[in-house]
Each structure stands twice: as C-alpha cells, then as structure tokens.
Image (cartoon, rainbow, N blue to C red; front, side):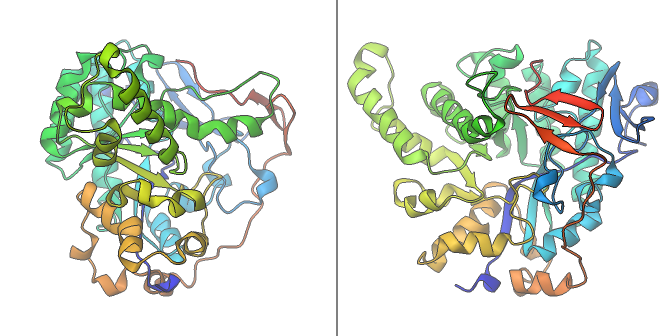
Length: 431
C-alpha cells in the first residue's frame, strides 16, 4: 500500500478546552460555579474551579514547537497552536497530517473527571460532568461531522449515576468513556471489586468501550526522586502492563461477555510477553489461586476483549501474530510531545512495510471504526478520506515549527522543570 492511500483514524488525541465551553450548558443555578479560564497577571491562562487553580492548561500542548521548548510549563492559549483548542483548526491540522478521524481525551478535568469528582456538592459535580460531555459531543465532535469519535467522562464517584450517564450519552451517539487504569489509586474500589458492576453493565449493554488512558490513575511510575525525567517517560507503558494484569485477573471480562476495554497510549510491543507470562501463571497456579477461565486461556480473553493502540512501535507491529489483529489500533497523540504530527503517515509506514493491505486497513481505521461505532464514510466518500485527499484539502496549512515559549525551559537531573519564574516538579496529581 502507498502511504498516500492509507486512511488514518487516531484513537488517542487530546483536546485543550477553550474559554466559554460551559456557556449555555448548565442549569441556571450552577452557571456561576462553572470552571472558568482566566488570564493571570503573568500572561498565563489557568482554569479556576471550586477554589482550585489548574495552571497546566496546556499540558504537553507542544505540537508545532521546537523540541527544545517541550515541557509542561503553564502557558496561555495564545502560546499554543490554534488547533489545540479550536475545533475547525484542529480538523485542518488533522487533514494536513492525513488523519481522517480522532478521539480526543480531556485535559483540565483530568482523564476521568477527577476534578469534578472531588467537588463536595455532588449534584453540582454531576451537572458539570453532563455539561462537559454535552460540550464534547455536540460542540466539539458535532461541529465537524465524520471527523471525531465522541468520548465521555464518567460520573466516577457513583456507579449507578455513572451507568445513567453512559446510557444518556449513548443516545447521543457516544460509545466510549474514559476510566481510570487503577481507580484504587484515586480512592475508589479496585477493578476487582463488584462496586463497579452497574457501570460495567451499562457499558456492555450500550456497546460502550471503556478507555483506560496512561496516567488515568493520577500516578505514573518513577523509580526515584533523583531519577531524570527520561526514566519516567521510558516507564510509562508499564502502567498499561499493570492495568492489563488487573483486567485479566479481575472477574470483569468473564462476567460481562460483551464489554470491551481500550488501553490508550500504552503501546503494543509489551503484549506478547505479558500474555505469555499470564498464561504461564494460570497454568501453574490456578488450582490453588482459584482462577477459572473455563476452556480458554487468560491470553485469549485479553485478545478477544482488549483494544490496544500504538504511536510508533516497530517491535509490536512485527509481532502482531501474537496479538489479535482485529483489536490493534493506531494513535497520533496530538498535541502531546510524543505526537508524530505532521508526518504521521510517513512515520507509521516505516513499520508497515511488508504488512498486507488487509492488516494495514484494520490497524489504521477499520478496527477503530468497528469498536467505536464510527462511520465517517457516511459523511464523506471513502476516496476523499485518504492521506492524499485530506492533505490536498489542507495544502495551505503551515506546519513549520514556531517558537512560542514565554521563557527559557530547563529540566534538571531531578526532573524539576523551570520556566521563567514558575517551577514545578514533574510528578502527577496525587488526588
């Protein structure tokens, strides 16, 4: 297959929420309580909600900037590429990158709505979740039909209410929901607890995929406070190994036969060994641990029910025969620092050389379309969905690198980031 003939659907990108996103979406009594994006005296933008100030509005929104400026400094919308927060410019950035469709994870509310979950007034918190989802489905995805896969955030503090929200947004055409890779780290029961059963049942009933994004436990692996940031970045996929083990050994996949999970931004190269190890453990220990997969091996359950994705994973692609080709998907990760924008097709094709056209189509778009009930071809003809066709529509988009830093960014050996007068440790939110 030629690079130009591929059709690309990314199952992991990110939206930087714009000012005024809650306008007109909340009950009147909660309008004044809505999160607000304000400009500080130093020129940076921060979200303010419930007495909290969330400074990293542009967490890794570094696409289009020189690599030496990468970091997680607080910034303003004006310091970012407009496609980070403007849906129409986002689509132009997708097109110039040859990308047809995109699923966008949230930013300031955190991956599974932890910001709202911490609110003591749970009626207000639920209203905020509903308003966020309505904005995402109607205003973001709805503004450009056929270009986005809707993704909701959960009412994570109450499985019954969470189930109601899954069913509500499913009626609006949303069949994906973010969830924590390890909810116990957030203060809720683990994946091994029946506490979540109402939520799982709703997802299974509605064909809603549960997406566990890297870092959605608000914790990431770090070996030492003295380790450089490179160690943390290198170990990020290990979060997904842990999530996979929890999923397989929990009763969820065996109890809800139609439920699918997606391990977002976790890569796929680790999967063959992880599944080999899981099967070894089962065959050697299940008689005393009490695990029972019937006539299947745990690896088969994983292959059937868990969707995986990768940005840049030569080893994983080469070893796809040890996985389920029908569950492998691709991601661009715009606008984060791992993103391959604006040369994603060329980067991907390096690892698809020698792969059959049938498998390429599955990995690049057909699997995503199937699992997330996404049908872009109903909006635009297939021949206008290719890398070549999309880039022709966006020939005027400037992809040159632009310096947008307000100050000099440094990262020392302890992982401390300094930008102008602002300093923070590269560590996750523990709440």
